[in-house]
Length: 361
Image: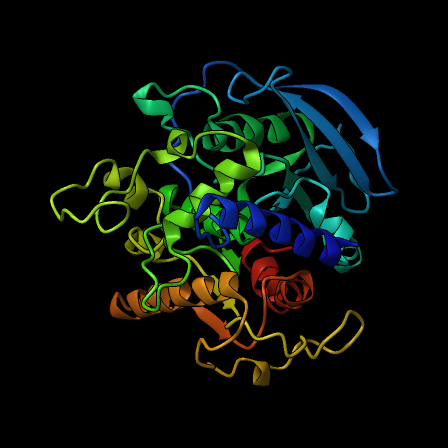
């Protein structure tokens, strides 16, 4: 069901883009957190499973009439909201068009974490949040997703659900992969490790062959949310939508939300990058198999037929080169693969020991 939903959503959006004459890839980024206007508060809890708790949170930083979004928590054995101890956290961020249910619906993360002493945090944002505080034509205000997640939700989880204050890791796919890297760069020390699966590593990526560009992902997000894409970070300027090299418009905002442009701030944090080349040769792994073999990381050329992952491939190759230039170590797996859940689950499992080791879970 998850694979069909993802592919169906991309098909519908691709048709919309065709009609509008716009080309777009897979994800976008985040902006620096600002002081919260008001505290987030829990308005509802729903038990969704033996270890699974869905929490509805209301905040002025969230857009919409209710200003409410869900957070799905996977709780460890022995968890108690009145416990004297706290637990480390693993944040899993959804991609464009996703929500708080995606990771449990499309992967075996519940089984993967069952024996681990960790709280898994899966927050819902919006289909085009880009994990950012939006520019809103220079006026700011809601939605302010980064402020909500890191300045409001994180302390709320620490106060109410016994989340630890100093041991957290973050991972995400597509838009969430960009969010994971951007959060780590923008808030050094907050996350002890970061993993990105098919993450949109550079919203300013320029395709060398006329394919999807980075800004196309933001335009796609605007279509997904039925809003003006320029609300996010404004316009990127040259070489997108203008031929004047001096016309940079709000380019600085785009760079602020680009893991590539903020790569130097990733130093000192264990990093995991995985991405495919757009060729669906099959993941060669399924849940229950032994851990994924390093042989899958073949460093293929970007010659696959899926345009979204081909753009992601180009972005991550640039980030990989930049990290090497800065002498920042990272575990990288470039393989054949597409922008779909079977590959993301494989890479979650492959990166899991690193993420847990970093937070002592």
